[in-house]
Amino acid sequence: MLEAFLFVGYPYAALVLAVVVGILRFTWRPFSYSSLSSQFLENKQLFWGSGLWHWGILWVLAGHFVAFLVPDWILAWNAKPLRLYLLEASGLIMALLALMGIISLMVRRATSPRVKAVTTVMDWVLLAFLLLQVYTGIDTALRYRWGSSWYASNAVPYLRSLLMLSPKPEFIRPLPWMAKVHLLSGLSVILLLPFSRLVHVLVVPIWYYWRKPQVVIWNRRGLR
Ligand code: HEM
Image 1 (cartoon, rainbow, N blue to C red):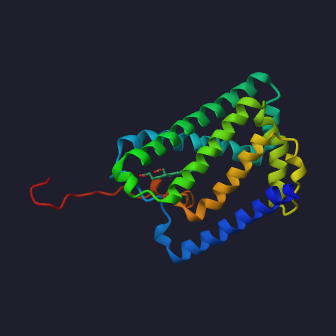
Image 2 (image 1 turned 30 degrees about the vertical axis):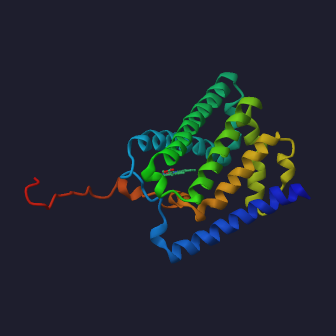
């Protein structure tokens, strides 16, 4: 019963709510689809915190995504111990960068008076869940080996079964409880997506890479 609620009901509820509220927010308040930069309020800590966080988390997410697409490749890659260690070590390093980044972003929001003034409760809820997510991932990686293999062999079939609308929670039954908390907090992050500044991940401005460069010209007298 609890298993059905947590690993079948909750994932669908989180996904449906994220999609519906995401569409409503985009329709009603399209300009709120952003992380509202705070760079002009404080830049130094943001440079390190945001840099470490985004570098780390984007590689970690890319790893999860590739394994989701081609789990058999991951299992084949991991068949040789050296390759397995390489994959696990690089994932762990990226996750540690993300951990340092998110802690630094939290310290910044708590200590910089100007950033503190514009920080909402939802910012804190989001940062807390992201911290929990990274922490439980690292803890699982350190205590239960080898996560990249059983992610491919158990978690991916479970996630795919959800997408195919034929949920099979039995795939993740044997996983350690820490990995289950990791999964649940990941679902909570998805749920928070449309309610928080995290919506910016849905509108990454990739066209910046191929648009014409902007020329900014000072228009004040004496400034040339
Ligand atoms: C290519 C993808 C991404 C881009 C281009 C991007 C860009 C940005 C930008 C411009 C900011 C605002 C920084 C500022 O205050 O000036 C930001 C903040 C943030 N991003 Fe991203 N982001 C991306 C992906 C992600 C992902 C995948 C996550 C989490 C799963 C994430 C979580 C956050 C959080 C939590 C903040 C707020 C940090 C704070 O000020 O406390 N971002 N991002």
